[in-house]
Length: 465
Ligand code: ARG
Image (tube, rainbow, N blue to C red; front, side, top):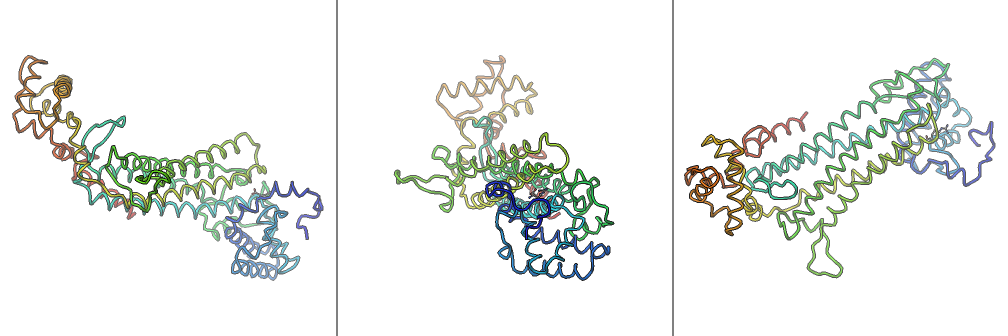
């Protein structure tokens, strides 16, 4: 039986039916649609809006469908969507009484209720995935609070760092990604069910009850808004896009650090491949693809924003097209999340190399200038000038940081200010020592092991919340 045969009798062309069917991407809504119908039917029965006997038959058939799984549905694209396929199943099971299920309910409120139910699960799942990645990062950081590393600005040597401190930057970015999802969840967790087609219904339905049965924490206050809003989906896609950005940046650094020129880390074989022509090659393909695929959710975000822009209230069929883009952003980002998690947790750090880099290329110069300010009350700009001159002279003389001693510093200081700065051998060598540099940065948020341990503790508090 065509379920809506009253007005039109299957006159749509096959093309048009296929073009307008959402049944393929509605697969994601199978469980949510059963829950939604179950809650609505239960409420109709409790409020004595439909006969108890019919309601019980409907509920039993819904249970049976749940047992049998989606394979029991006729997913023919001539059904516009999963809601029609499900109703068709119940009708085949119990006959025309199935029609009571659709009292005071439209597919317009049903579909956005389903999407919200399914999205809540997805968000919880992603939050769980992010937290487990953060836990891995925290564990790695704990092992590396003393591991010297080099920090860059403009991708040029900047200052000595620790590997732990760099890792904890990842953890903090991911924490914000996670909190963004937690916040979005509140706006997804609102029930539009009972909005019906757009202005609710004359039946005395109980929207609080269906919201409660479906585990929504609140009921949407306006039925027009209920069926027409998809900002919750756009917001969730933004969160996935932002998470993709964090993950893409991590992947990008793995690509750079694992190159021969950097040699700071090595990707495990499990996440590498070789070349079909160059037998020596170890390529970070997985990291590159994580970086490349991180852009997919940006496209989905732009698509959905454009789709919901400038359409009139309330339900428009355009809205059907939001869902596949939402699911694609979710799946793509979840894939990146688990792959980057696995990849980062299996990299090996080349400590000899990172230690070498931390002391190379005058990365400790800032500290030398700071010591002049601290110990000799020199204005920072003057100190900056002296050390700048020291570095350019050292480059000209072809010497490295290790060769710079008190005499060298005094000579240049005299040239710049007219007098030696007289720091003494001890202070000069301490200032130029990368480990000492790192250990002196004990301020909140700093790279000293004590400060990083504090940051790790804060992160663990968040994870245990
Ligand atoms: N398949 C539709 C969607 O995903 C369900 C609502 C259809 N409503 C309608 N009036 N045709 O949005």
